[in-house]
Amino acid sequence: MSNTENKIAIITGATGGIGFQVSRRLGKDGYTVILNGIDDEAGAKRVEELIAEGIKAEYYGFDVTKEEEVTSNINKIGEKYGKIDVLVNNAGGLGGRSRFEEMTTEFYRFVMALNLDSTFFASRAAIPFLKKSDNASIINYTSIAGWNAGGPGAGIYGTSKAGVHAITRALAKDLAEYSIRVNAVSPGTIDTPFHAQIKSTKPEVFASWKNNILLGRLGQPEEVASVVAFLASKDAAFITAETIQVGGGQGLGI
Image 1 (tube, one colour):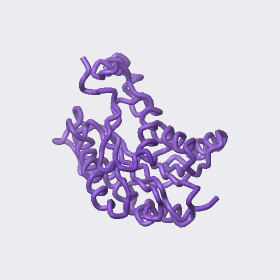
Image 2 (cartoon, helix red, strand yellow; image 1 turned 90 degrees about the vertical axis):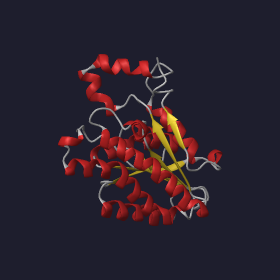
Image 3 (cartoon, helix red, strand yellow; image 1 turned 45 degrees about the vertical axis):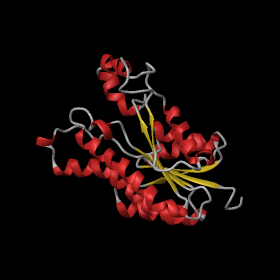
């Protein structure tokens, strides 16, 4: 397969939830998908599932908060395939909850690293290989918390996601001369393992969340994946520096 035919997508944090569905969708759209994660057993299993569906997939285990690991692995991928077409900075998370008064510096740095450093490290490493694609893009993940600063104890998560919103636009400005597009999705409340704890311990709270969503239900991972796939496609060739809310009108419910 020639360099122009074989499209390469890297999806960080792809061993479950939204990241795995993004990998599946891009794989079905003809990409060779490179899944990243820190659970090597889950990664191997997910790749098997995708290959069984006829998707070309590989797994690279590395921690997105560790600069050297990110750089060396993305370099390996880029050198192996000669280019990268799409980088999906899916890895991230709440990291726990802490109010500012008792927040440790260690916790602060961890949450910032998980959401913002990871986006910077992966994007920086991928840029030389994205330049070799004829339809290159980076897709980041922000959150409604980036605008409303998050719920109780999630203030630093909101802060990190506001940073992702800003770095998305900054990267778009920086890379426009190379025709590399940079956009973000902002998933609302999506029914994934991210919310598993509250779903099992406080089902009534989990069920009430839909009342704040205009469409009256939680989102599914596939519904985020379809927007990511659109942003990666040539149908979105004139879209850059944008953040698309994928939340069913969250915050506008009854």
